[in-house]
Amino acid sequence: MYLTDLKYIFISGMVLAYKLVSDFISATFNQGRFMQVHTEQLNTGSEPLTALLEKIADHKGCGTSSEGGKSSCGSSGGPADMAPEVWEKVKNHPCYSEEAHHHYARMHVAVAPACNIQCNYCNRKYDCANESRPGVVSEKLTPEQAAKKVLAVASAIPQMTVLGIAGPGDPLANPAKTFKTFELIAKTAPDIKLCLSTNGLSLPEHVETIKAFNVDHVTITINMVDPEVGQHIYPWIFWKNKRVTGIEAARILSEQQLLGLEMLTAAGVLAKINSVMIPGINDKHLVEVNKAVKSRGAFLHNIMPLISAPEHGTVFGLNGQRGPSAQELKALQDSCEGDMNMMRHCRQCRADAVGLLGEDRSAEFTTGKIDEMSEVVYDAATRKAYQELVEAERMEKVAAKEAAMAGMADADVSDIKILIAVATKGQGRVNEHFGHVSEFQIYEVGSAGSKFVGHRRVDLYCQGGFGEEETLPSVVRAINDCHAVFVAKIGGCPRDELKQAGIDPVDRFAHEFIEESAITYFKEYLEKVRSHEVDHVTRGDADIRQGAYVSAA
Amino acid sequence: MAYKIIASQCTGCSACEPECPNVAIREKNGVFIIDPKKCSECIGYFDDPQCVAVCPVDVTCVIDNAYPRYVATA
Ligand code: SF4
Ligand code: SF4
Ligand code: SF4
Image (cartoon, rainbow over all chains, first blue to last red):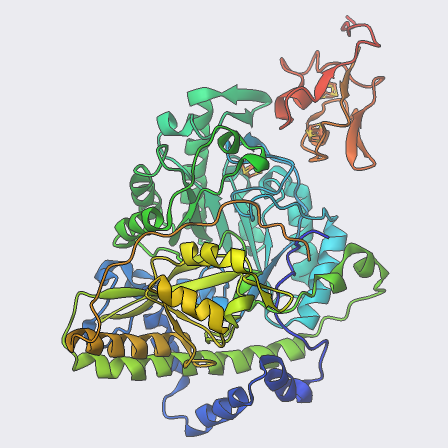
C-alpha cells in the first residue's frame, strides 16, 4: 500500500449529523477543553469577529505579534504587503497559511502522469519531485474516479478544503485530465478550493482555462532565472514537437515560467513559487530568483531542500549531489525573507500529512472501495459546522499568543533566539508523544516573538510501543540546532539522552498552544540566563533527513 | 515500419500517447504499446519520432526490427 494523500488526514468520525459535531470534536481531539473554551470564546465575545480576523491577518506571514511594532521579519516582509483579497484566498489554505495548516488539509489526486520536461532530481518512476514526497508513487486515477474520491473524502473529513493536482507528472502536460477533474468537482463541491502545480513550460497557453475554472492557486517550480544555471538542472524539455537540450532548453523553460507567472498575476490568479535548493548549483542564485518572481507578482516563495539519495535513481541521487543542511536552508530563507513572504511550513507536499496527523484513513478510500460506492452524497452542512468551530479555535490561539507576548514588553530586549522542536499532531497544540513523532515542527523564539520556521522529519522513535534505541541519535541529529523539545509525553530514557545532547525535554506544556508555550518558555529561559543559572550557548547545525519517506502503512 | 515500446522500461506515464500523430499508441495493462500498423515513425509529420522525444526513460521507444523501415508513400 503506497503512502497516499490521505494517509495522515486526521479525524476519527465518519459522516456526522450536524448535532453530533460537538461530541465529535471533543472525542476526536480527545480534549474536552476544546469545546469548553470555544463556548467561552463565543460568549464573552470581547472582540468583534472582524477585529480578530485582522489580528490573524497581522499575525500571518512573520508569525510575530504586531503589537508595539515588534516584528521579526521587517516591515516589508510581513502581511502588510499582502492585499486583503489575497489573504482572503489563502487564510484557509493549508499550504500557504501558517495559521491554517494546523487545521485544514489538502488532498492530491493523481490524474496527471505525463511530463514534458526532465529534472535532474526526478526519476519518472516516482511522482513529480517538485511537489511530492521524493520517492513516492501514487495510484493513478481517471478524472471520474478522482472526483468521486474527492467527494467521498470531503464528506467524511471536513478539514479537507483544498484539492490539488500536482502529478505524478505535470498537470499542464495532461490538460484534458486535469481540467476534467476540476470540472467534475466544481460542479458538486464549489466550496473546495482548487490548485495545481506545474513546471511552467506550458503554463502560458493554459492561463485562460485556469482562470475560467476559478483555480485560485497555481504553484510554479522555478529553480533558476539564468539558463547557465538551468542547464545543470534540466537535461531536456519537450518543446514544439522536439526534444530540446542544454542551455536552449533552460532558456525556453525560464521564459515560459516567467511569462506564465506574469499572465497569472494579470489574470488575478494567485501564484506561489517553489524552488529546490541545490547546493553548489543554484543556492546562491535563488536570491536572484526570489527578486525575479516577487517583481512579477508571486505572493509566496517557498524554498525547499533538495532531497536526494542514490536509491531514488535520479541524476543528482546517482552523482552524489547533496542536499542542504538545516542551517544552510534557514540561512537562505532568512536572506530572502526581507523581500517577500517566505513559506516555511511547506513540507514538500506533506500538507495532507502531518498538519492533521492522525490515524491512517487511506484504507477507507482505496480505488476499489471508491468504485464500490454507488453514489457519494456530498455533506456540505457538516463541513460548514466543522469549519466554523475551527475558526473559533484559531482565534483563541492567536489571542493566547498575544497574551503571552504582553509580558515580553517589560523584559529587556535580548539578541538571544532559540529554536524549539515541537511534537504535535495539529491544532497548533503540543499534543504528541515524543515516541510517535515522525516530523517535528520547529519554532524560533526571541524577544520579538515566536515564529514557525519549518518541519524536521525524523524516523519514528517509538515503534509498536518500544522506544528503539538506535533511532534516538537520528532524532537528536535532526533537532540538534534546538534548545528544547516540547512534547505531550516522553519516556525516561530518551529524556536523559536528550539532556545529554543539550536539548531540554519539556512536557509541562502538554496540550497547550504551541506559540503561547514557546513564548512562556523563552521568557523563563531569558530569566535563567540573566540570573546566570544557565549559560546561553549557540547550538550546532542539524540534518535534513534524506531518503524516501515511503514507509508503508 | 514501426517503433515499439519496451514494456519493462515503460513507466506508464502516458506522455507519448497524445503526441503520436497517427494515434498508434494506447495503454495496455498499465504500460503503453504502439500499433505497428499505424506507426509511421512520424515521417511526414515531424522530424523526430514524438514518442522517443517525449519519453522520460531513455531507450524505451525503439525501432522494431521485425518490421522494415517505413517509406513514405508519394
Ligand atoms: S517537472 Fe516534475 S515530473 Fe517533470 S521531470 Fe520535473 S520533477 Fe519530474
Ligand atoms: S514514432 Fe511517431 S508515429 Fe510511431 S508511435 Fe511514435 S509517435 Fe507514433
Ligand atoms: S512516454 Fe515512455 S514511459 Fe511514458 S508511457 Fe510512453 S513509452 Fe511509457
